[in-house]
Image (cartoon, rainbow, N blue to C red; front, side, top):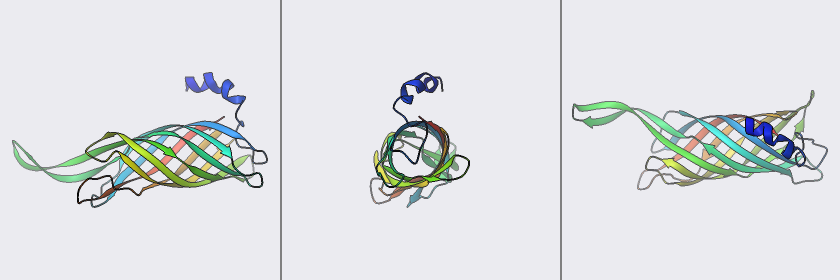
Length: 191
């Protein structure tokens, strides 16, 4: 937060001060939030909660409509939990919960559409692909991609978004397959 406060005056000269749907603009932002991630496919898992930290950049792509393209760099903690996995140890056979980490650097390409409401609130539904690379993984493929869909809400410069990520690439080697999916809730500031 200290970094944001120190750099805000620098960004202010380039940024929009929040979305203004009547003007062409460029904005910068930061996001912090939580994910509830799981695996689907041949490995179905329970949810694993993690965090998200991101820096974003967006710009208006249409003169006639409040249409924006947003990208950035996200660090997202993902993975999954499976209860009662059979284990073998010196004490014999047993069962334990298995947790897998799949922490990813992601670059999304999101299309956002601005809808102005009363009281200076702006709705920003979005959809688009993301491309990721796992920097911490438990025996999974590192490269992955998928789609994000959700809705953001802005009030002046304060921003809140919620949505779902759908993995489309197989992150397992071999005969079994799995995809990484997540629900997310992020808060942030746009400059």
